[in-house]
Amino acid sequence: MPIKVLIVDDHKIMRDGIKAILKPAPDLEVVGETDSGVDAVQLVRKLRPDVVMMDIDLQGMSGIEATTEMLRHNPETRVMMLSMYDDEHSVVSAVKAGARGFVLKRASDSDLVHALRTVAQGGSYLSPKVSDRLLERIQKGTTHESTQAAPLEDLSPREIQVLRLVAEGKTSKEIAVMLDLSVQTVRSYRKAMMKKLNLNNVAGLTHLALATGLARPQNFTANSGLS
Image (cartoon, rainbow, N blue to C red):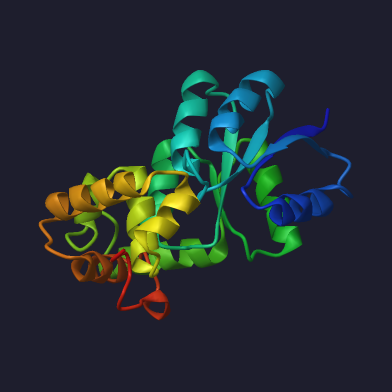
């Protein structure tokens, strides 16, 4: 029996690329695809895939939220998270949600297939760069449980999404479009984060995102999240 795979990513070119990578493998069968976390939860119930290849940054329901929800109803399904980012908070949040793998989107074709098979067979997989980074942080005593990253523990997965986008220079209007939210909702998230983190402005949010590795320094702009 081939391994049944569901692909969840909000970029069609990414889904098509993954299908092209998996097509030559006789033991892998793509049984469905979607660009929505909400639809993914429903498709898992309908298609019963062995592995869900889940984008962590989905519009609307995030990959973390979708993973939590689908495993609540279908605990036998295995989730392999796909991400552009290798920050510690994303990795730990994915694992806490129940993901058995975390693969960077820049991974090679062979690594992606190997990771998928490993997860399908009951194992766990972290991209080498991710595991190296976690090991380095553990050795230095600066893991996710440290005081530096601890403030992010109080944020919801959606707030983490908004925080990363704010730190990357996105305006409230841009974030609203990307996450399928109203501008007022985005501003409410931003206000709630400031209160939880005891910060007074967007610059403080951005600094925290950079300090914890949630965002990259080169993505910072002075106007991030102001409008």
